[in-house]
Length: 266
Ligand code: TA6
Image (cartoon, rainbow, N blue to C red):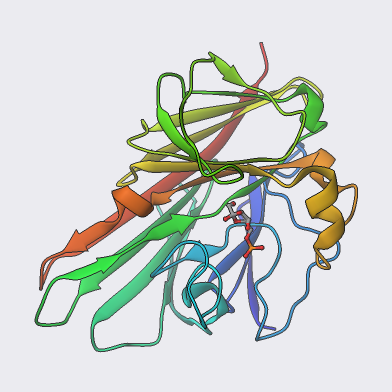
């Protein structure tokens, strides 16, 4: 499968044209920021397990259709790249045209990783869709991780179907977690004392944050995911899902933008 490799001197990244799928991002001298399963498949009819799956035009299951939409299974075109004045590199990928919408995914690799999903409504009527950059982050030990930035938000617990309120300052993990936080803010921090860093997920154009760790039983049921890999990853996903879905008038364009960086843990 075709991929683009970028080495800016201060960071490296890889993006497959299959799904416009960012599979790697790391800063020189630091552990990778993105997690990629060692058991991932790389076939046209499967999503790559890890990195940043592009979820569009729906999130989750849909009767008779692929989980998490069509974009992550599509063969995108690499339509351009640019060396920026700050020595970062911008790559642009385009989803095959659909008549109702045009979709570009713009990845900028530099001191930070920036990804922007641009959806234009090229049809004659309103276009309603869900989108999500389903980012898998690498952590040292999930038992020691704390997520900060979701306090006081309502969320749907995907395991129980219940609507809940996040009362805690930090989210910690001791079992499977699968939550869709609605109307979320623009910054979530992943505190990782084992790797001695805080991963910062800044976003704009996104009102939903999804948090997922499959834990033990689900990991064992996933053929493209190692039984122990849940220990070294957490998904913090930025998008607009369920009640936060986007309704785009004809001729308008939506932007979902995520910036990923890390700072040393204090
Ligand atoms: O991350 C939220 C979620 O919807 C989980 O329920 C889990 O299914 C995950 O996405 C991965 O989905 P996938 O289709 O990539 O196995």
